[in-house]
Image 1: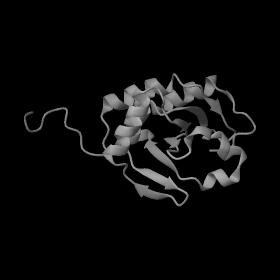
Image 2: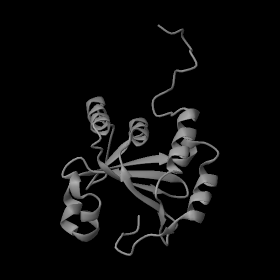
Image 3: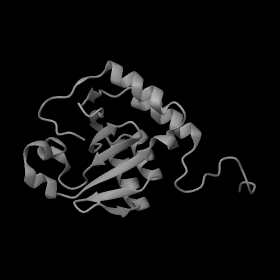
Length: 161
């Protein structure tokens, strides 16, 4: 048992500074492309680092945009898929003030490409986690500027995020 007030205690929805630094370092490793609106987009996977960000923040479920907090069992299932080397696909969108993480648990095999070419795929339930830049620390903007300077233009088939 830890002492009351132990330094490792973190309030819900208040990620630690070390998480912010580690997540920004992780974001630097992703294959980003840039869109005309200034968004950086990376089609990647729900890795442990991304799942940790999802764990710490509220989720919106689309279509509809209903706010939810993913149950622990769902988060554990996402982590198990990652551990079994079968992580779900994800789209990370790095904007001036937020990092959005889009993923789909149902019919995930075609995500996100099917949503870009088939409007009916937008009816399949998908989740979006928004990680405010302010929760990732003082280097958020500097990392964004570094990445946008290196990124190539996104393919024309990709819709704006």
